[in-house]
Image 1: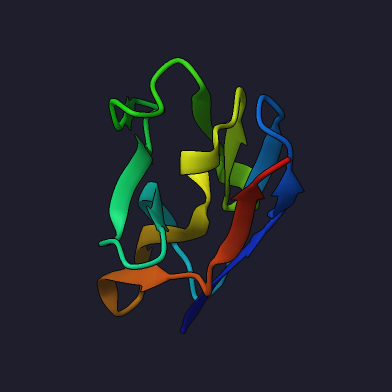
Image 2: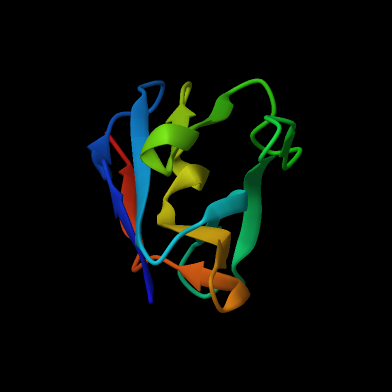
Length: 119
């Protein structure tokens, strides 16, 4: 069993910054990739950023240059630094990880954390 717990969301003003964390725990041998998704009201969930075990990253065009994903492999934790936030960044942010355990490779989701960008 693998659990992902996000933290760091909240209310932030336009132009502000926030840092999200995603901590994985449980039966983990290693983590292949970690991803951040977001879902705004009445919209589909979309991929925001991802990072593989080697540290290579990718971003949605809408967040390039503003968001930075990173990870601490020793802590099984991923981070999303969000700068120059816009109202359209308002969403529930979810962490997803491909985890290798004794049972094989499995994808796991966190419960989500709300980020609201508003003055």
